[in-house]
Length: 291
Length: 312
Image (tube, rainbow over all chains, first blue to last red; front, side, top):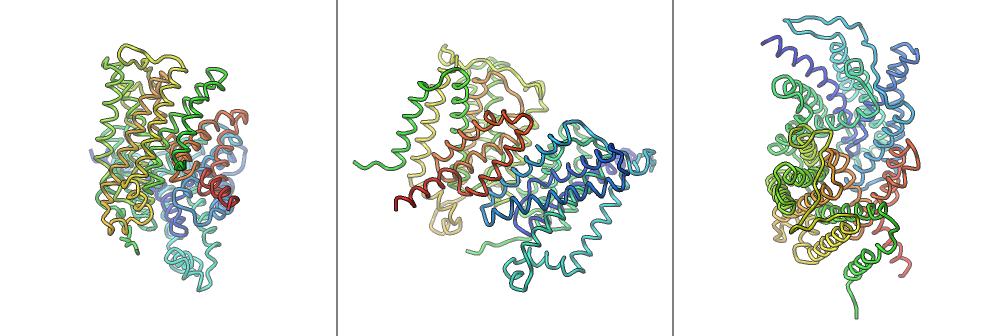
């Protein structure tokens, strides 16, 4: 009983950590620009795919990981520069379609250049599972959770202690006021895209040893990251992390106790119920419209 | 005699639809025209919601799926007449859309996008997983559409049917926009709170348009199921929802004829892109981005502005 519950909790937290990283990425871009970036899932895919292929080509694992994060970050910067910036202050629907176009382009490029096959990354430190109260825990899960904690702490430091981090917060709070005190908000937007692409890639690389990766995994992962970000309340960093973990656990419990066929549907059922009763998500601020 | 521009547009559409068969050399082109007309009807309905009322939906393929699978399942597994199956599908869609509309349409912007996206994905997953009824990912065959013992067979017959439906939907949409209800919808798009202050029951209008556009999608789903004769869960999927929204936005939000144009372009595009072996997705994505960046108002309104500018 307990070991079963613990087992589902472990796998939930592992996937949840990746959703959390993706959700923080969504939140970051949303704060800096008010855009929901539907290409976020493709950054996750790019990270996992590039790392797996580099390792296959004989590049040492740590080097491959660093390069894969750079590839995804570069893709994020390019998307912002070529697609988001020229669009300026278009309507939400227009921006949504632009990021969907960017996502299709990235997926298509991955299909052409990286191929249609499934790829796996070797586990970072062996495949021998740890047994805790009868539940098995893969070492890779510890990597996923550990790195996520480190990344979250680093982000907290960045936003709390550095001038650049505070500039991002200021921009998300009030763009015009931020410009008036001399913050280059264009650069902040670029930074947000690069950073959230890198975050997505880290998540994609971390889970690649446990789930196979291929050119089309980005759609579902991106959508679930969006669910996690909305669950917590768009634009809330803490909300994104809690939302991601919650989503991972709910999904794992559904797969374990209810039906594995409907595990992918559960996040969407959850988000509908939450939005019905808490239209701003769990941690979102209530906004009032100015008329 | 002066005619309203919309009346002129409607007559032009009717003329094109009537003359088009003369220019269609074979079944392939008929098939393309039929798909265009089906997509155009859905896009016109969806535009009432997105373009005129300003509410986004990323889940309309789900409603399309309900209609399609209701027709397929009720006719082939329960032996119901196809007309009745179509109506049952439409009623089921209307009931579902009505039930979720109030809480969903309270949401704004990205939260509304998320909720409609979630609804669409749940519907598509039910279709994929209920293998006994729907055939699951392998899909299921659908019988021909028959009404009073007459079957609609062949591209030419189907062309007449979908062309008439498109005309009907277009006329209905144009009438609705010109009616006081249409003015209310546009007021909601412009400034929802101002509309409410001016006495428009905004919630009720939004709900009604949501249900209307969902029912149009459902009916076209039924039609598509019978026309194609085979269904796979992809018709209810996220990507199909995106395609439908793109037709509306690409053609021009708040422009009935823009939606038709958007549907024509987006139906044609994959056919043209098959020349780019392997690069289809890349080129499709690039075209989406470029049109939205350079023509953010959509094709038709941009063209109209250009011509108006020249005339003045």
